[in-house]
Length: 239
Ligand code: URA
Image (cartoon, rainbow, N blue to C red; front, side, top):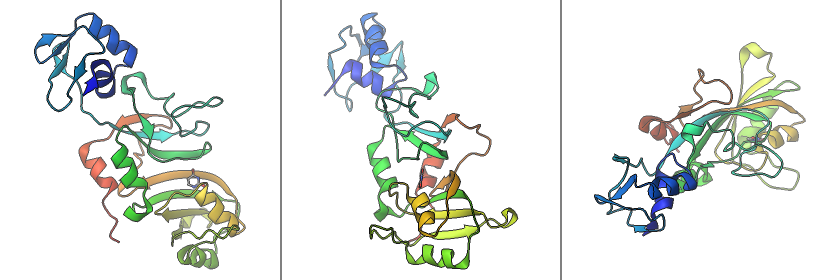
């Protein structure tokens, strides 16, 4: 059983406060009867909750963000703006969090959801969901670096990374690489290049599994993912 205001806030686009106002105004029915008590208990599996005659939305939402630089991948932060702070008002609801972290200065594909299971599956190294990054470097990519990435980079503290793929982007004079990793250690891509004596001057995530950042999305914008796009996260990883 769940509180009615919490249920509406987690399923709909309303905040908890807005949900409470709606309930008190008589706009909400539970199994056909108006319910004006925000703290009434509902069974999410059994009850039909309508707001202004409309069923409250899906339990889970999945949002693609083209994350800009300068915001942190967290739900709250005392100093910086978070990816949740910059969500457009119509996509906001309670319980959303970024599935995985991009550094403050990293751009690109970020999934924001309220589905903890999906986030876990996406992030667990055991599930081998490939994350692909475009990294601009302060120097050339050498064959030795490609080999080291393949063998598994070892950080200065002895931590060993899983084998990763490093490819060059031909037109860029070998200073832009595409890195594919299946794990998400803290500052992983930057640290992997640092071991090879390179500094990452710009980092952008371009895909998760088979889901690619929508090239038409301006930096900082968001959109709901379709069911097919969510499935694509888990496609293309034959390990
Ligand atoms: N690796 C990094 O170093 N930074 C990121 O934001 C993501 C992967």
